[in-house]
Length: 316
Ligand code: PPE
Image 1 (spheres, rainbow, N blue to C red):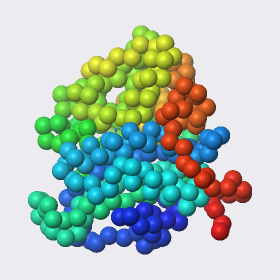
Image 2: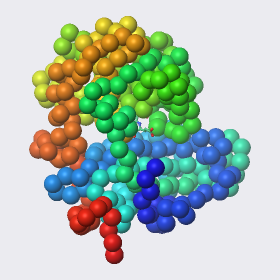
Image 3: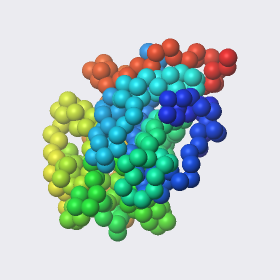
Image 4: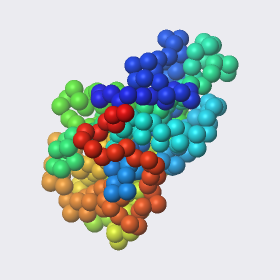
């Protein structure tokens, strides 16, 4: 990964290589942490964080559902993130806040172990490749089902839950595919290992509902609104596996991935990215980069942007 200079850890800005924790941190043993994936884009008015407040609200809710008491408010994390972007001299980056149970007490019930909070920012390119965004990716339905709401909390972006996503992603990568699509415990289509999924069926956009164990994706929500504003019908309903094969178009949405067309699923060809995918993708990318007036309210502009001179680093 590409390093930045500073990481924000428990209220301090520390050098990247010194942002360390104890090996007996609770979160390392049990996955007892919650995180977010956010992106900051370079716009004409300087760096801007896409739907920053919504991401921080989801972080707070993820924490609350796992009984983690956040020692910092969303507003404190928000302003620390702004300062971190400026001090690292970045104009566009990925943002990773993480809150986890730290060092102090072992065992599953460890209410006295502190909650550590960090935010890191770094340049992160297209998650499923630039070519994937352009030409579409090859995906495969995973043999692993998405975590069930009977045993975990799909709506929470909790660290330990990602072992499920890692199994699915690893299986698909080892088999030569770019992404895995997980079914929910009932066998209906759920989502990608790190993205929500949309299909086009007879000109209508279809995406699995909240009851299908999805993560309530912020890109998903944005794309639903954009598609409706463009005049398309978007339906949230259960999707049968075979509908993936019958779909006219398929695409994935996520912060890291952005909007990525799927050109092949389980070795069935869907074809080149379709018209609706292209239309929505174009508008979505405009929204991310501040080129769409109607969605400017989604951007959290970072004050005192670093100077634009050569390269992306500030030299002081
Ligand atoms: N489902 C899952 C399981 C998921 O991890 C993500 C985001 C989404 C859906 C889409 O949510 P949203 O980003 O709010 O639209 N995955 C994050 C982490 C990826 C990673 O590998 O780390 C991300 O995209 O940042």
